[in-house]
Image (cartoon, rainbow, N blue to C red; front, side):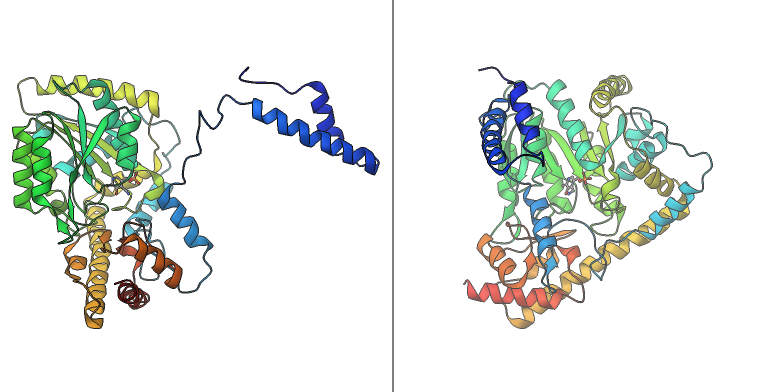
Length: 458
Ligand code: PMP
């Protein structure tokens, strides 16, 4: 069968004449029947992409949840789905320092809309290196880092995955390991570039904390040279991070198996309010001399979600030819970037760069970060104490033990669906809530809804 079957002239005529207002009733009914038949036949044959070639894909669960929330007309509805910061009135928050940077940019008479270089805005990428690695990082001084501006964190993960798919060779099976669970997009991004993946245990359902033994054991047993994807802080979706001692042990195992660490950092400063603390794990690995890559997002910590500001960093180990190695790597990354996006979008990077390169604005940004993380911590405390006051069955210490945007409540899928039905509270099916969706006006309502669903489904 030919892939494309153009409509015959008679079909075209039938279709257009059926809309004519001058035709008689009999004429128009027979014509419309013929039109129906012809449209029924034509489109079926007119594609090379039938359902066996392109099956219907399910809707993205998170964006589907957002749409369902928007459709809900109940006045008490609560959105705990998408990971975006909200103020105490459940409204998106433009960071005051971002407003200032925006003003500065708009008043700059030299600003234009020319293309950025392939690797992005140099002031932005160099400030991003310092932010993630620390200003006095030997890796920066020794020119062992190359950085490219990307389409936010997603683009940075993708660029790294693409580079590894093309250039990373291992002696045996080449495998990527993700935490179970992880940010769902990791699976799609790495498999889209043809890399095979497995998961390592991460979340203990029993303690609602880290399954450290499971994690370390699986990383140890993975084929030598596996790519280990690690969330630098504020693990999505669980809110559970390793302690510094645990990170040191993870580093030991990764070194002993010659694995390749791939850090995803989407919440630096947003998690604890302290940039150095949230960046500790990456800085420790770099200090230990690992060769690694880092995907950095400015969506959450600058509230630049839709502006798509991010950065990809490749750090090579200290050696006499490290600078030459990094130059080669940078040259190939530039080719990949050119073929994927040509050059990155300017606006969000300019905003972040304006703040990162001005000590006064930087200090204001840190205060904004403390405000966001502080409000989230208050909501954690409020939710836990309300549940404990009501004697809601179960333990609730994990709500305050977990960190960052998300909390893994421990609610089952059945409970999540019931709470949506009964109380119009929207959260992902795995029981994850975006803490930023809670505020002083709705935290009690939510706690009561949790209490009710837990008692009813015990
Ligand atoms: N990695 C993780 C773990 C995330 O949670 C996110 C944001 N949800 C990202 C990467 C990237 O997001 P973005 O592309 O919006 O920067």
